[in-house]
Image (cartoon, rainbow, N blue to C red; front, side, top):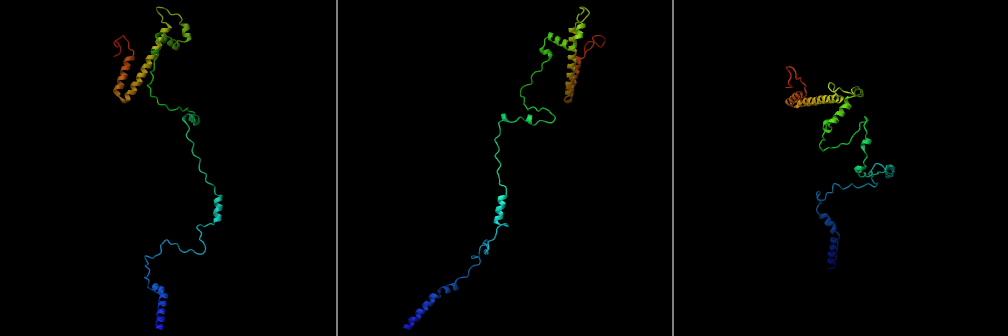
Length: 213
């Protein structure tokens, strides 16, 4: 009886001691897919540390200390008011010395251009003709005028004034007719024809008399 109990106790002790080895032998094989190592797993490092750059830390520190420091640019100043801005006409002067005037937009109507006849009386026109056409010598030589046969120096000056006025009017209308002919030949021809009838002098004697046609 005692021998049987001793044999049973020995068998139980052996089973307890051999249990882990038996379980390890009967464990299922590991799956190559489920238990695979990740791809980005770093390789085991060697005993010496590996450098990430080609130069040493001391050389990198020396180069960083010798490199110029970055200084950010200063901010731009705010724009000056228009009253305080520099006049570019004084700064940007052209080499040909042509004065540059500022640009203006005129919205008012053009003022009327008055003729001498519009702003002067008859006596004023005579004075203008005397100053323009009569010299001091002419005035001294023609100081006296014969009442019946002579003509006064005022009348001669006024006749010269009116002749120049007639020629100026003819020139203006001729230019207007030429300019109108470029865009409207009929209107240009009409202006030239009417100006000729208005200013052309014709004789009252002979078969060709009777005024302009």
